[in-house]
Image 1 (cartoon, rainbow, N blue to C red):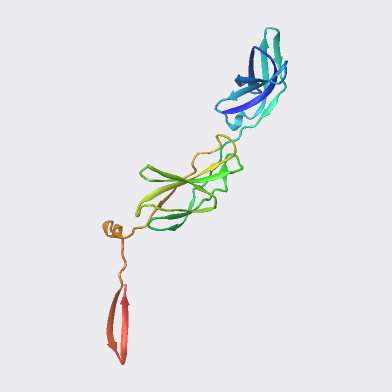
Image 2 (image 1 turned 90 degrees about the vertical axis):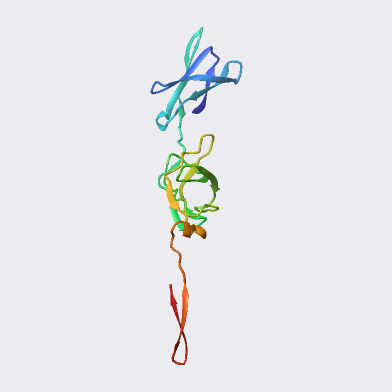
Length: 204
């Protein structure tokens, strides 16, 4: 929804009309002086295609009045084009690069968030981010997550939808390795006599 104001002469009925013929009823008026008011209009379900020039048409028992056109610019919330990039993996953490320089929608970007959830679908958390890289900690081992970036531009309604998700899985750790059949590395040391001194052989 977009709200915008036009200056009109006091009237009993008024609506806004765009060049394309779209109409928006008047929501409220605010007096400027005894003869002039500021009329407020809400244009519902706007898209960038609704940007353009609008005018106010007023009706009263004395006739019809038409204002000059005013420009309306519709800004779309920003959405990252690409998913974040995985840079490091641990048993309880994932490091990502936001990869959010290319967007659909409009800037400027004033806030960034990382949204992550398990692949099963349960929402885990939203974390504000002030750098281009971010560590998501306190995760469960051997668990797959979906990670998306949310961007916000100024004014109400400025937060876009989550961008494309990255799927990443944490490593196994501790008992998880045995329970899930993950590979564990063991080092054995054998000592044998060779010549005058001991010789150590390591097998992994």
